[in-house]
Length: 129
Image (cartoon, rainbow, N blue to C red):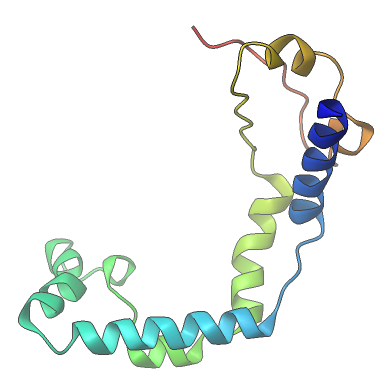
């Protein structure tokens, strides 16, 4: 039973990574939450410092700035997809296995759905000291 659950978990993780479900409603929710947070932070001196301090410490570099209300309103689902999809397709994934009884079982071959993804190199599991 445990092996079946572990297999289902690994297949679910694989599905989330290989075929992500992009929802416009999630972007709308994130947009409204961030706009509210920026609005609240702008209402107090400490909040303004929190929003602007990193940008000021890095010589006005916009990469360190908090998003403005205009930036938040301009965010679109396609922008998020273009930023995240290349990472999901090619970035390495770290799997952490907890529990000494699982190590020998995990060194054996995983289910076919998680063995390889196109463009990923096979890595051997190493036991950490």
